Image 1 (cartoon, rainbow, N blue to C red):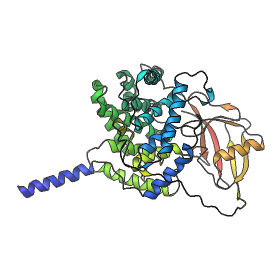
Image 2: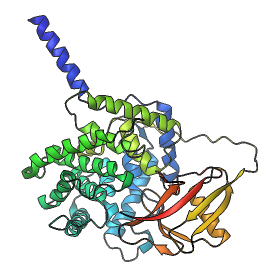
Image 3: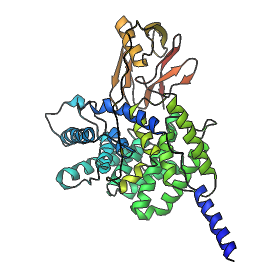
Image 4: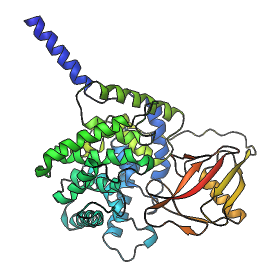
Length: 428
């Protein structure tokens, strides 16, 4: 019986391991390289450039920036508390939206800070009012849409949860209903991100014993999100696409499930992410901030009880290599806008390696083309092209001809010579 007991124990242990989502240990040079992308952004302390997601990603990573971290958090506090608490002297163009309050609360928790006192309570109240407004927009019959998105809705619940702030069951119920009925969650390639964020919010509520009357529905929703994300895995290993995979892995790492499917899926996703990082796919700071915790086997749910004393490796400044100045190669990118009259279409000359944003700037400089953007935590967001502004539930989609939606934004995507890029106005 002793040998049989040992065998059963071993089999049980193997089964337990199979239930866990984990990825191989990341190469330290790759991790350092990703972290180095964040350092220049941490030097930009003006309100319009501050991004609390950078701070959260770094604190949950295996890297630290010491003095830069402290200064960045101090700047976040000055900017967000002054503007969000109604400082009339603040610049309206630099004022963060209430929707940006959620990542700010995550940043405070990443430094082991719990919001409280008069100012803290006002911040929490603002975020709760935001959720109540979104709940009313969805409607009692669930036929409406949130003013922002279910991604932002889930993120806001998560931010309040890690701060141990309970929201009304009816607020959580709207997100539960959306997951249970696959309701308005699919906005192109953003669906996996939205599901993962909802799953992280539900997992936090479960672990924090908040909204206990909804416990059974929350447990079922967590399993539903797991199943949907696993079904969304591509042959290459990504969940949805390369940029939704980090958030999906954050969620899957928090919620073991029976069977070996999860372990294999996560190993494949980890290998795909490693290859994508080596290929230089991760340039956007928001995407990097979601990936760094995964490479340290952490998730936003760990902010319930963050380990602020965990040892981290000092992030080193990248050493720039200087070469003799050369005249950059000029490429030509065909820029098309068929959604306006008359349709726009011209070859735009730009230096090789230019971003799509550089192409738009050059087109505007040459005349006959106009565009406007709005700053967001994920980078500049197109709001107007050729005088046509986006309306409710519309956006300018970036298309690589003939019909491939780009996964990166205008600041991150770098077109090749002869490539055709279309700006297409679509509704969701």
